[in-house]
Length: 107
Image 1 (cartoon, rainbow, N blue to C red):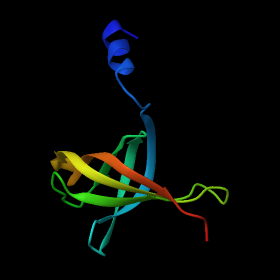
Image 2: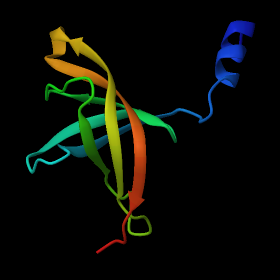
Image 3: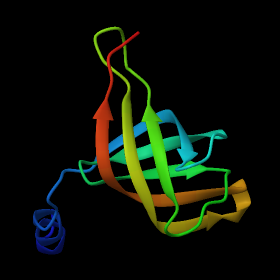
């Protein structure tokens, strides 16, 4: 690790974990649900990849499914703070800041 990488890493309040899981999301106040893929996750945000076009400032409820019977799904209220188009894949990458996290019991 270079000095620059170390200095950058130390500025983070939350560790960013690489993940690759399907999530669902809905815009706040709407009912139409969409799917995307969470590419990384931290206590403060996530990187979401989807073919659904979103705008800066859009507020979402993102549902991360349970990973087995001993875990509960996670609902995160999040806001789109970065948008990156990936034209060759007909997708977008979104930087989301997590505003609130709610876990719910398994059914």
